[in-house]
Image (tube, rainbow, N blue to C red; front, side, top):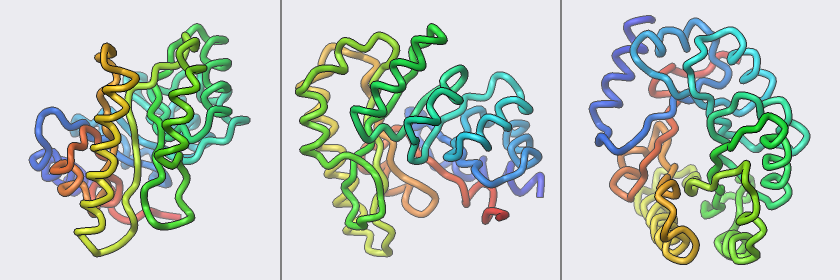
Length: 224
């Protein structure tokens, strides 16, 4: 098992250009598997449940960067605000305000990504492109000194249709360029395009992704 995780990581990293960051999606996997990935050099892990992530943060090496990648309820922000490295799925102004409030209590600036809903499934969270435009043009985020909007994230439709997946990633890339131009032209930190998972990350990289979230291809199927 140990060598398998290391081999999987090496295989995936070999497919990623230097400018693409790998987030190892470790939710539902036990600490020993994370340690195997850690020993193989991985430092960024993605979790989507506050209690699980906090427990892992408390028991695993301190230099791990924890990315919250799931749907985050506002009442859970306070538990992760002291240590989270990035919140990848901000899908409302309400959530952004809460992150600002909780980060301020810990005198931290928390990097976040705005989550787009481009996929065709109704079950996915995220802002429509128009919702995202409205949030940014409203401008309230500009006064927040404890939140740093550093890019966008999205998930493609769960489909075998590569053309559909590519179309969605390219929609996100074009929208990123629009937002960068209109709101973050002078902000070097706004540069993250987080799309691509185990099944579709090679296409995502072709379509401008700079951060991929890969779980199954590293750790195998989850243990429930």
